[in-house]
Image (cartoon, rainbow, N blue to C red; front, side, top):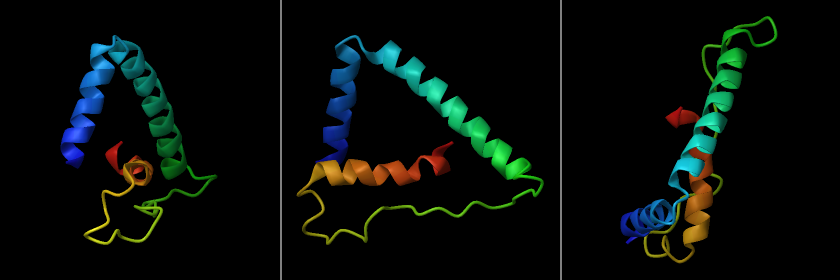
Length: 86
């Protein structure tokens, strides 16, 4: 159900004509976050860093039978995966 829900949300967004504007804004933000992270990892206030440890989820794991009760919480959980995907 969750992959279908996300697919439908993306399809709806693109079909409403917001796709190009959202994509361009997302790319600007992505580039900014990426450059800031690169700056911190390469210079780090005089110290270079080889590793950045961050949480991968804001909550403990969902119980198997309750994972889809609150889809919004699942989407919010994706926020912690942004750095990995850059």
